[in-house]
Image (cartoon, rainbow, N blue to C red; front, side, top):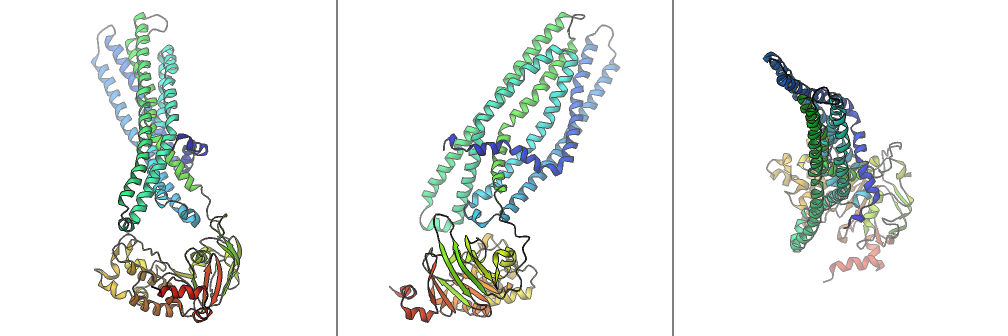
Length: 593
């Protein structure tokens, strides 16, 4: 990917990222101001030290006898200044860290909350690994750059102003020379930083791509091994890693040039000050603009301190550029449009399960229509089976019922109430959903079953497990219901994970059910027992059953046969077989050899 492929908008976002970070740091402004005060005291003590040293030097080389009490007194003052610098530098750093880390903590909270508020369409269209990278490593990069930036900004500005003021009191000519020459280091740093900003942005991008690819490979490791994809996966990883290396290497190289270049300019400044200062000392006392040896030592010390902030600021260009690029990615996430708020809407309560779908149109992509003019009436307690070829719209219909996606036009009603007029949370509480793709959290078996009802008693959890025919298996585990499951239930089989998900729904007793291939990973014997449990569970509840194995839906009250987003056949199992149409062909194809 070439440099020109980066959009101007993102470059502008990167440039304004620091300002946005400062807005997030606003709650900790008192700590920042106190840190600034500590920094002022620390730098004032630092700037006072050369005066004591210079006066001591002039006193020692001056005419007359040397009084060691004066020297000891100056040494004591110098020691006190050193202790003051140490104490207030520590306090300043402590306060800056306090404000920075809490800002980052809040930013991570906002990012995670944002993930919960984003529409499902955004999550579906984004790489999981890339989103994880933004909430994880990108915010860590911001943390490093933010701490460096704050500390360098506070100490740098005060040091520059303070040293300039002290130099003017000693010799205005040296002060002018330093002020005129030092900005050269800023120009050098600016041009190098401007050139490598895009490199850091691309580095952050490919870091997210790499994270997404690794997550994808780890999640599908069994499939990768099954199809022998390891070598091709390594090749793809190698290409992404090479891109990351290229951009990272270029960014690191050019940013590493900043500090040596600015130090060279600052050393030139120091040499010029030495030459001018030495000339003024040689001119001797009484001459206009003359310096003492002690005064020259002060000016040299101040010249070094004046240029030091420029060195420090340019020395952390890498951290600042990386933090800016990472911040732009994080703020892209934070500024993504939220799912429209429904807090002002009433809640759906006491639903009986009468569902009406009226002339619904929907498509994921505008140019590719999926569901067109779909209508359906489902009475309370009915079992509606949905069958059809892959891509016909079965799962899409479920997404619309749950309002994971909103219809493009038309209406879906529950008990005569448009679901667009109630809160999503209350709507979903009235559904129980078991998917083909299981999901379990890292926690105990009890916590996973009670995920939808954290206040459920142990007796209720056990009853749900027994109804799902998973109790006996749980009791054989090392710690029974207190057994801790791995990530996504990695230490139990797929069928057992699905049984736990079924138990989780049985515990909530919702008035409406959605079973999307709910028994696809269960053996035939267990499936029969689960179907019996489902029969009890579905009594009096409106149920939507998506199935590929048509033998599991023979007892459905209504079977909807979908194709290309439309219902092409409707009836009971017997009626559809007698009709000899699409469903009959689909059913009979299961027994063909």
